[in-house]
Image (cartoon, rainbow, N blue to C red; front, side):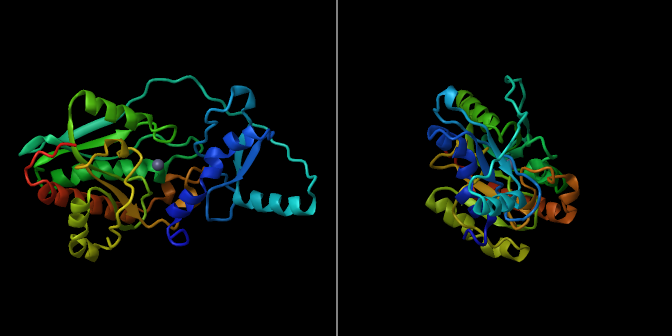
Length: 306
Ligand SMILES: [Zn+2]
């Protein structure tokens, strides 16, 4: 799977970036350099979240990701000269927290408005690029679900809530706050779908639900297949909706083609010109179609308690 699905490959090696400083710091390293998490060979470093775990502050070490080309050069040079000296200088810093917000809008359900189905992506991005594919496309597609329902005069049975989550990249803070508020306000979340895998050609959905609901969604393959939506495997959904997880909550992750995503992911290259309008629109239609099917056939007017 790691050879076909770049997200699997990313998931399999991203611990080196996330945990590198915490682990190497424990063993007294001076700093940690990681190869960027990408399958392309280029000059663009890919940033991303990292942690020091419970390492004492005095043992914190600098960490950086270098481009795949630079990593190849470093590896070659190190083999030639094991005493090679590496110099790096950083100017990044963590500033104090500042207030920011999730953005929420909804279409109230006609039959069971108390049942809420979330459609979302995340509003923030790493600041070295524009975050066009991560996750501007997810934001646009979430908004387009509401637009397509309105345009086609579809009134959902359940409340469809569009959520632009804030701060996914640096600790899913918006998602955690959203889930906490949902609990405080006794809201009944029945499911959700997240688009946070880029805006490329639709391939399908990943389903995070109980066995019965997973099977029901997979039985729609005959409806979705003709539109290129063949992947309906059980798996994760999305970092922002995952905190809403529960026995009767059906969560879905939108899964577009993944081959080019890690060319741009968390780099200065993740800009608007990389988004193909038609691929993006096909994704919006795919997500809207699944939301329509789920709203109509999954919940059958029964109040499902999370
Ligand atoms: Zn993202």
